[in-house]
Image 1 (cartoon, rainbow, N blue to C red):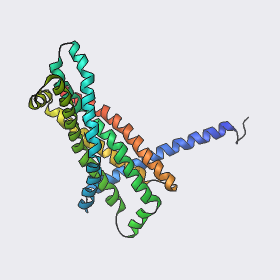
Image 2: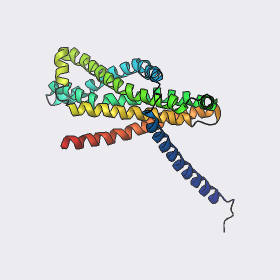
Image 3: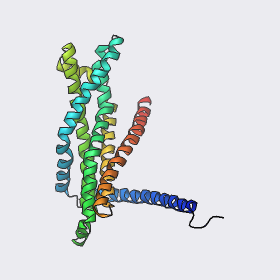
Image 4: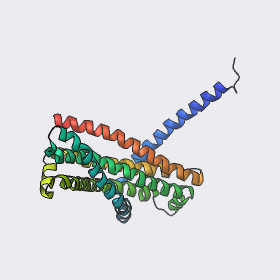
Length: 268
């Protein structure tokens, strides 16, 4: 017979508490997301704040996206060349790079970079506003903090991340062109013509839709973690860290699901 204060009883209590907190967090996230959809298409729209947040998401991430996209294009081309040379198919290199970057690497790399830079920024900003009671002060001032803080930021990520994704794909192809041109003196127009010869409208459409979904995920996760931050400055750091980790995890899951759905459409 075990006493109520025994180690086994304590472990069971902690496990039960952890399970309860997990499902409670899922329910809060679900209600948070439903609230966004309810308020995203209703007045007021706060267009100026959406533009400001788009500037924060887009322009301030541009240099990092440019550098990363260019390096990916160069490295992926260098890694792919030996395999194609062994089959005497180096002429397929632009098409291979175009398919890989436009369909997969461009949106995914952009989403991962923005998860780290934008997601953490949103989580930390809203978290600090939460723990310093600035959000409560907005409610007293008759301003809807959810619409002004959350809806505008999610709209900004949904708008800017697809644009950044297309830009990253273009820069990645530019890096690939630099490598191909140094080896084979291929013209710029001929390279891009071959790169896009095997890319269909379905590929571009699925890439844009994928980027929009990634943008929504990054925005909503960062806002949710920041909006529910607790325990002062320590909670702000935890909110920023959780926003990055969770958004990256969800981006990988969504990548798998969207690729499978796109393949079903191609088969039909």
